[in-house]
Figure 1 (cartoon, chains in turn blue, brown):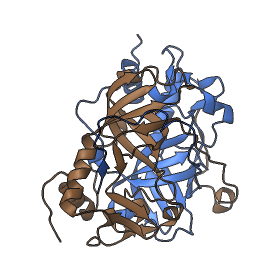
Figure 2 (cartoon, one colour; figure 1 turned 180 degrees about the vertical axis):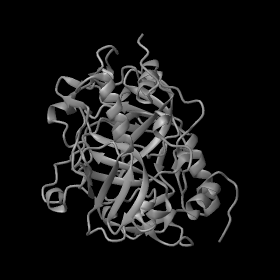
Figure 3 (tube, helix red, strand yellow; figure 1 turned 60 degrees about the vertical axis):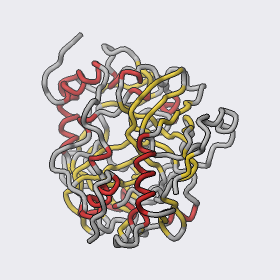
Length: 199
Length: 199
C-alpha cells in the first residue's frame, strides 16, 4: 500500500540533503549500431557547436530521425525482451559516450549551439552535454531478431551504450496544455522544414 | 556536420561488442521531496509485489499521480534551471534508490505484480526493478522558487536522487499509430478507474 505521511510538511533539507548520495552506477545492457558517426551538434567544454551550415545541419537532423538503427541487447539477459514486439514504439535511454568529461559540468548553453538564441540552463535544453548524459528518444519498433531490435528514429551515434528500454505508453505523455518557450517552438519549426524565422 | 558512413553495412559485432564498456556513473543533481514513503508496488528479488488490495492500490496510483512534489536541485549548479519556467511540463529522470541490488538482475516479471497477467521481459514493463533503475515521469511544472521546482504528478518516492531534468517537447512523442499489448491497455483502463476487465 502506498504510504503517504499524515503531516503536510515536507521533510526538511537536513534529512534529505546531499549528504549520502546513493551509489548510482549504470551497466550497459546493449549497444546501438547505426551509420551515424558524429552528430551535427558537438558538445565540448565551451558549450555546443554546430558543425557545418544551418540548412545542411537541419536537413541532417531530419535524416537521422528517419534512419534505422540496431539495438543489440546483451545476450546474457535472455528473456528481457519477451513481449516487446507487441509495442509499436519504445523509449530508449542511452549514454552519450562522446560527451567529454568537462561537458558534464556545463550549466548554460546556447540551444543547439545557436548564438542567436540567448543562453539558458542545461535543464531547459535537449543538449547532450549535461551532468548525467543519459539521453532519451522515442523510436518506432521495426523488427526483432533474437536479441537485436531494429528501430527507426534513434537520434544516437554508433556505439552508444544502451541504459534502458521502456515501453512507450502515450497516456503518460500529455497532449493538451503543453507549452514550450518561443525559441524552442522556432527550432522545432526549422527542423520540420517550415523555414527559418529570425527574431 | 552529421557524418553518415557511405557503406550500407552496419558495423560488425566485433567492433561494437561489450568488450570495453564506458564508465557510466551518475551524479545526483538533486533530490525529490514528497510525502510518498513507499509505492504500492514493491520490487524485490522475486519480482514485483502489490501491497494491499487491487482497488485500493489503483486508487493510490491515481492519488500519487496528482500529488505535488518538490525537486530540490543541487545549489552548486547555479543557472542550470535558467529558463525552465517557460515550460509547462518537464521530464524527470530519477534513480529508484529503493530497488535492492538483487532487483537489478531480474529479467522477467508479472506486470504490476499481477499474477493474472503472464510474465514478460522487464523491457516490456514499467517495473522499477530493472538493470538500470532510472525512471522517467512527465510532470507539470507548478512553481519555481530558487533551486526548488514544484511539480505535479511525479510518481517517485521521497528521497529519490534526481538524475536529470529535460524539457517536455510533445513533438518528440508520437500520438498516432501507437499500440501497446492488450494487458497494458487493460492496466491503463484500471488506473483510469474504468473498472476491471478480466480476461
